[in-house]
Length: 249
Ligand SMILES: Nc1ncnc2c1ncn2[C@@H]1O[C@H](COP(=O)(O)OP(=O)(O)OP(=O)(O)O)[C@@H](O)[C@H]1O
Ligand SMILES: [Mg+2]
Image 1 (cartoon, rainbow, N blue to C red):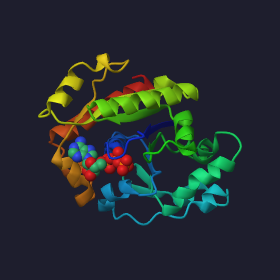
Image 2: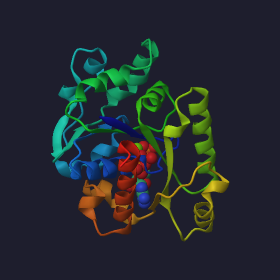
Image 3: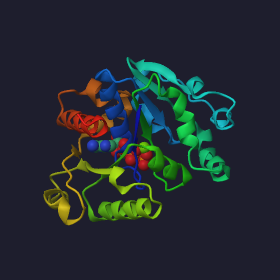
């Protein structure tokens, strides 16, 4: 089982859109996938509403170890795609983690899934917290959307330094351009020479596209909503890259 996360301390940069699209593409490629919406706001649920999403359950029983994680899973919202929806009680996740010794509560929760699940996709809230630390610790790779602007690059540097300080493995952080709008000069400039600002090449570029915004309205992953769109093709490329990175093939 591999675990990936979509995370940025910045809000509204395309984490959830990417998490849902990548989880869906993974499930379509015969990879048994679990998408876990860790954001109490529950945006991922909107993108999957077409799968007749039901409400998430309170997390307290899972946190207390009284219920196994399997009870929280909605199986096969699409074939091969399981989903744990968010619940407002996820806000307490951090408080609970503060009081827990060790840094592997999330890992323990996920452990029972390892036999049936090939890929876990974590959609994270835009906060730097104990939960984030555990996610950064646990994930095999963390995909970080960067809108191609200076501000966004700044927050990338902060995240990288945070990961360095906490010894969470900087290499697993994988930035990608998100909401890239070639009509904007600044976006074009930043995309043209990312190595001037980042210490690694960035060849995954998700374009700004109104069809991605429509995912929320329609409650569908992009591959279902508009498979012929440029944005859908970009997510397919991204999934191919993620597969290579995770399984080295
Ligand atoms: N590539 C894109 N092109 C156009 N709009 C996009 C794109 N990606 C995301 N959006 C829109 O931008 C908004 C924020 O996207 P999303 O929810 O994926 O971001 P997020 O980083 O998960 O936000 P949050 O930090 O609040 O969790 C949504 O309305 C979404 O539809
Ligand atoms: Mg989100």
